[in-house]
Image 1 (cartoon, rainbow, N blue to C red):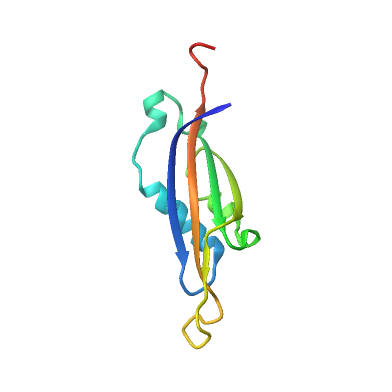
Image 2 (tube, helix red, strand yellow):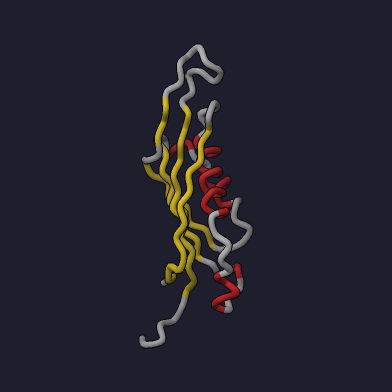
Length: 120
């Protein structure tokens, strides 16, 4: 069982295209750029041993390409869960990108390792 050592949050948007994957990818990058903790080195693990859980919230979960989100991470074992959340903001039809909502995605990024407990 992976012990969670770090949780970070992010928000991303797709202003004109109504692209749920793009909004989610931007949210992931936002979360990643919030920290610079070198967990693998701190605990003496290889970076490939990281267990990454990505929880994504958007209004239309079925329109998120999970493989695009996994590709953001250069290493680690990534699990992506997409659920209904985030926010769609309607845009007037006459505006640029009209007809597509502004899409806002939220993510929670958890990082851990499979670790043995010292006291069982």
